[in-house]
Image 1: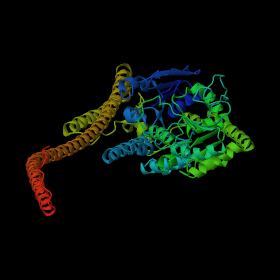
Image 2: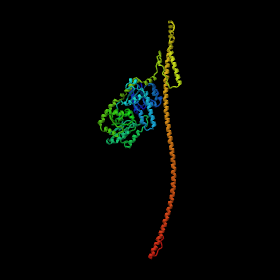
Image 3: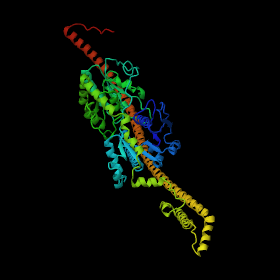
Image 4: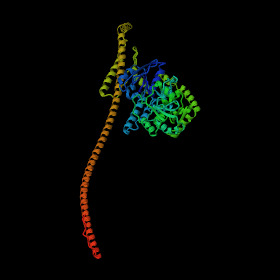
Length: 620
């Protein structure tokens, strides 16, 4: 079996996510039967298994990947690698494409909050990438039969499924087969170090831990699990929901679900008091410590295409590895598996009451826990990496699938060896690509005419005229002097064939590169147009803001004028009020004087009527 180069697009190391784990485990198992080189965008800080050589390349830098491709006979790469390294699409050896991760569907959810124009560009880019991969790959891996049906439809559209291919491979298992995410071949063993209990908040041996062991991705639904906790705590006060919520160790787009999940827990008053977050990414070698401390597992998702076509997630398979029952959202391959083997329960998507009820049934029934735990462990044994990887092993040993495109690709990559003694015209040069300019076409015709002329005279046929003696003499002369020249001519012609084939192949590669550059130029032009549209939009917004600012300034000036007028009016009003007050005061004083005079007159009248002398008024 030939050596295998495995290219991971994700981090492989002590802390790694599902894609990195998958490539690490595939390399470990294949290395038992063939040499493996495993490379990732960052240094691999794990001790490589026997038979595995680890390396590194720089994401997006073709020069760092080229030395690995130049020496590889078979390449297994995650399909997303081609997004940054299209050179693998022109790799001349056997290419196995791993399509287990439906990136196009993931991105539909991951970029949902972005502008529609950007989302459409990403979707178009992902569709183009998938089309390129389906046209080029010699074999394909996927994770579920549902995924396989999806990709077979794509292969049909790309013209890869032909009668001759079906004759040789009726079910296409040599072309595309299922290699699901697997379970570690090594049984889980706790290291003895505390993981959650006694480490995180107030968690202790008395608590029943409901563990969310996967990532808080935007296509998952941790919020429903949190909303179910008040009902669970009312019946099982010592229950605790724990999220392993460390930041992804690789370079991934920032997601909004982690923040939203913490905010919801805080709003419900559960943060640190029923709902807990472990803030570090778990080392791969220590995951058993955390998983074994859990009572039950939970993993919920929202309703969209990603979950319909997702693989059985790595963390869910870890639940089987440690023999723990799981509550899952219905609708994906993992839920089908859990229900079929009775290792947990599947609940309707987004149903808080159903989630609470399912978890309470497991927490309240130790016997049911024990039965489902045993079933989980048995199923985990069936899904060990050494077992599920067998379709890949077969792909490494079978001949390449026969199809028109694959055969043409093989002809493009091989140099025809010409018999030195008997070259034939059937082994001549392939026709040049018709897209070249007129000068190249003329040069190509001149070259082919020269080769045909060589083909007609290279044998230097022996003349057959004259008598028997003369022909015998000619034969001797031919053997002595001309056979070596004929052999030399044959070697020259064979070299010419090989050189012409190489030139044609290089020409095709140049045209392919040119076409790709044109596509990139078009993409850049589209991006420039988009940027120009955004600039125009920003300029329009700026003009609108300027108009609004001018209107605001006019309003401020008008308001200031009104305030000044109001102040002037208030001053006039105050002056009038003061004058009126003085006038009223004077009138009051005049009235008082008149009243005093009236009292004096009244006293005089009364005195006069009674004969009482009038006293003069007293001065105060």
